[in-house]
Amino acid sequence: MHNLGFDRCIRRIQKGDKSGLKEIYEAYHAYIYAIMLGVVRNKENAEDLTADYFIKLWHAADHYKSGTGHKTWMTVIARNMAIDFVRKAQHEATVADVAQTVSSKAEGGADTALQYQPSAESEALATLSFKDTIAILPQEERQIITMKIVGELTFKEIAAIMEMPMGTVTWKYQQSLEKLRRADR
Amino acid sequence: MTEREAERLYKQTAMAEAPDPWNRIESQLDEKEVVEMKTSVFKKIGHFIFGGSTLKTAVSICVICVIGAGVIGQASGRFHGMGKSSSTTMDMASGSGMNSQTSNSYGMVYSNGAMAEEAEADVEAVDEASGEIMEAAGAPTTDSGAVVNGALSADQGTATDEAADGSAGGESAAGIESTRKLIRNLSLDVETLTFDTFLTDLQAQVTALGGYVESSTVSGNSYDYESNRYANMTLRIPNSKTEELLTQIGDEANVTNKSESVDDVTLTYVDIQSHITALETERDQLLALMEKAESVEDLMSIQSELTNVRYQLESYQSQLKTYDNQIDYDTISIYISEVTKTTPAEEPSIWQRMSDGFVDSIKGVGEGIVDFAVWFVACIPYFVVLFIVVFAVIALIKKIRNKKNRKIKSQDE
Image (cartoon, rainbow over the protein chains, first blue to last red):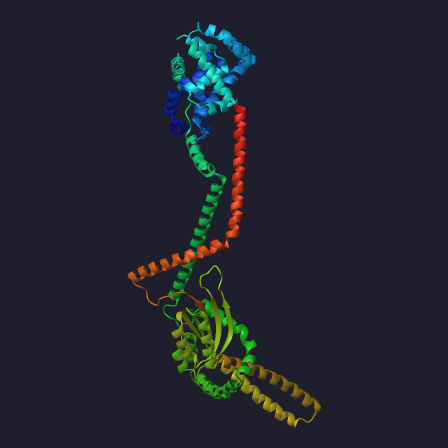
């Protein structure tokens, strides 16, 4: 969806027209779900967050400022929602799989990367399916590859959202793509 | 698997895995209120005004303010002009008959009031200015007084009725002037295109006719008005020359209103003359008695009475001189206004009114443009201040708004 089409949908939402939200939903719900899933690593929670996201979009449409790049705006909101959810889950420690995800995240990106040492990686990935490979991708890599492939954002936009240098973004993207490329179809 | 295939497969997987919770979402969407629609309209306006660059917005607002102020100022000027023309029309309506009745118009009241206040003060000055005339008037006064006295004793009632009419025109007044003592006051409203020339000519004519200017006031010429100088003059003209002066004024200016009042003072005049005659007789008798007085007491008593009689005599003579001056010199109060176009004497035709209105509008537009240009250049310092204030306000609003947005964003994060 182009910016102009998105602006029109937002104006319809501002007027209380649900079809505007429906149009945005159809264009982006898979992308938003992928972003959510990349952070929370749980399908049910990701689905709940996706639903909450579009409800929030319904109310937040008034705050949207046209001409700022709607994909970046949507991605930032989605990512913030997912991160908030993970933080709350970590604090309350009520959801086991979220806690695991957070604990693995707490160890840091470098530690996460250690799970995929090149020496062990080739061996392990060769036996994993494509979906399993996606599932075990580190959180940051999965977000970057989702933003790039599904969201069709530029590396510059992704770097701004992730708040990391563009070189790091491209490197992580290439790394995750290499892992997917080696996975079994 | 190539990179491109991996990308395509990743996208397909992500799209396929995504659930479809739309029904759940839709069920939780509450209806937006109409107020929000209105708010969004105002937000659009706000974004239009404040969404652009601060400089452009400030310039736009200043331009709107300047044009608005100019248009309002111009419009008010037009309205003022319209008010003026309607006032002139009213004058025309009231003076359409060129009435010569004893009217109670403003001009007449002013004229009478001025006469009452200034008469005594001016008597001596008039005496000096026209000593010869006063002497000449003094002689016939006695004669005419005798005639009038006889006439009054014969038919005093009729004379009173005629005096009470008070509507004697210039011609009729002239006809009975020999027997009646009439004080004639005139009030004129005139329009002139050549204000200065007319004033100069008028004063020259008054002097040439043997009259004088009793008072003169020239006012107006304000910046806010187009050509609104006006003058109030009180002229004193020998009554035999009044019609000549009126004719000359009518030739040089457009007379929009003329009113005239005639005050018959015959009774008072004759009464004063009788008093004077009686007092003179008494004085002569006292002088004769004084010559015959034998004792000092008689002499003192006669002297005291004689002083009293002389005092009364001089007082009556003074009153008589004042009346003589007022009778011999007509008082003309003239209101002269400067106009760019004289009021037509006749009601113009529809076509004439249309063409006049069109020409006036073209002229008004031209004058309006010139006035606006002058006003604009003159007010540039104010515009600079306005621009600085507007610029500062917009910059402040934007700063506050951005700060608020950053706060909301940080709270979201």
